[in-house]
Length: 544
Ligand SMILES: [Zn+2]
Image (cartoon, rainbow, N blue to C red):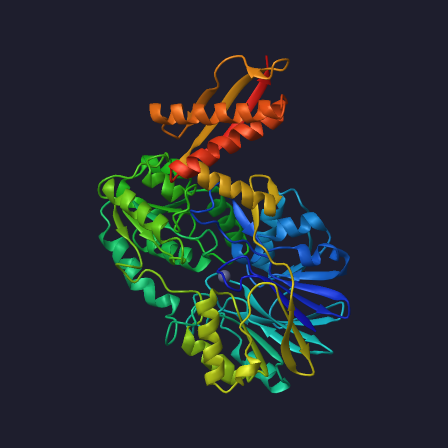
């Protein structure tokens, strides 16, 4: 059996692993990664499908472990390549992914499964096990083939007092351990955190205290998929006589799904439309919105910038009931500062116990290694430091160091006779989705242009050419955007253009496109010598 992680190893997000056996492919998870500030204009980042692109007909199924964006967000793009790949997952996961696919106008071929079930797809015999995470209905997947048994946990933790009483199936892990797990792929996100992750129940007092003391409106921000946390907010609102409105499309959509399927329990009459809140006293209002990671387009960021219809004011309380994903720090603190400036009291994990992680800490991981007793280990879901920390835990429990494979996206691992080995590497670039286009290299160039444009601006050089004489009819014009031209610059640039024209006349270039190229080169070269910063320079030469 061949195992190829195409995303999620060396980064937090866009999780995707391909399993290959007897010429058939099984995909586990297909998520997105959200862009950083250095990637302006990018909507999401996908795993690289190049390796499987020519072999879409060999894909027997895509299994989704749970409904988080970093595990399901890439499915619409995968199904664009082949629409009838069976999509396998639990009830809630499939409900979230189908709502997403509907927006992309794709009708998927769904296969609902639940914990305890076994299903075969081509040469892969799959068994699903319950895992506890920050979203309900998560599954680990055991993959049996003639080449061995793999257990992939997906995202998980071992909360012993979960709100939905659905525990991670440790007896199942132990039973598979007895059978003999050849390769154990475990969630590394919290491998650096010692001890055990606190239970969701532990944050109830902190949330309650916010509700007890808030003088006016409470605005809660969370992931649109964090059903357990939102349940806590709904329960607290009911206890403190507040009505609740969901704000934002994804929040409204997902919570309606979760409630309909029985994963979210809402007292009758508690949820109201956001418009109805206007007629209520501020002290009877809770709003739940997205934007806990400082995403610029989400409701909370827009509230912080006063661009949202909901105007934050003195006495409002904002509760960020979520994690702080590495890389989002600046954006989140910008939002917190914005909200504070308008008078809000912002409660977040930095100043109150209002969040617990959805991922297993070191203590839980060690516990699992001792239960499963794997022959080989591949840490998944994490940046390098997380993968490495997870690997060290496995080694401490006695897995031989040579059998613990710390690998990044694109590394090919073969499992032969119970031994996992790195055998090569396939293409696993970052793939940017930008508006409606899904691109590879061209998008990265566009991104470099965007960064240059935002740092240094742009200058357009406009010339009118007499094609008979090869001379310019008028002096060139410089049109600048986001770049400050002074007289010295205009003189220097004009001289560079004159030099370029003289050179062109010598070799008898009277062709517009060639002159454009020469002008751009000449001004760029001059600026490289004289200035540190260079704007994006474009030349346009038209015939007189
Ligand atoms: Zn997750």
